[in-house]
Length: 119
Image (cartoon, rainbow, N blue to C red; front, side, top):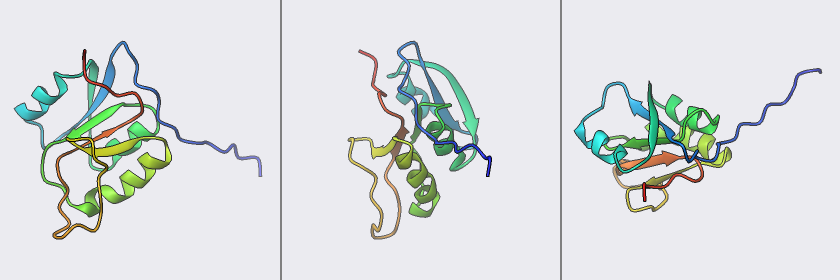
């Protein structure tokens, strides 16, 4: 009928400061050190795959995860983020892969387009 179709899309990372997603329960000094390398305007806490969805919706820009996760923790959010134009990479910039022995993910960064370290 008359319902408006709404497409999700990541936003280009703003040059005046990004919004970083952080875990409510897994925050530590390693995250602070990681984020210090980026121009972060604000931080938002959220649970689980919701962080991926906020990046996919253009309401956040980056989510570093430097703790243990399993493939089932990331698969659905990863699919949504990819559809919206974002990506998830390991800390070396390689795309997050699935079907690994043991199913454990490496530390990763979920991000929208244009995310870059400070120069």
